[in-house]
Image (cartoon, rainbow, N blue to C red; front, side, top):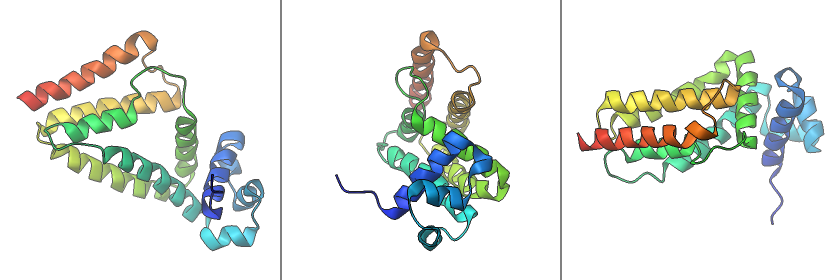
Length: 182
């Protein structure tokens, strides 16, 4: 297996610092040390902490965009892909990616300007959902329910447990199917 690039190692190290030490400990020095890369090597890729956090946000949203790219062309397909990319089919303990996302959001909140790229991506996803061939209000309602579920999972705010996970996800998918038929 090929060795990750220096840039990927730095992004992985930044996520590790966030997870193990918290947002307040995310410094360029801590990331360089954790990645085993010189501070100069880090500056080559990320001249500022904001650039590092921006790259972390881009990495997460790019992965989400890749999952959304699986959407077909039928009415509601983009929204179905949005649900699949956000809510796993089966209830599971928080995945490492969830923990990285939560920690990253905590880090971004320290610098609210860092949320701007995320806001732009959400605006693009919302525009695509509103043009998904179903009632835009129905698509938006499902998206907001999914986003709320995602936030509850990330923040440990009583997401649906094992008994409700699958029925709730199925309900959302059926709501999309109903909207596609109308």
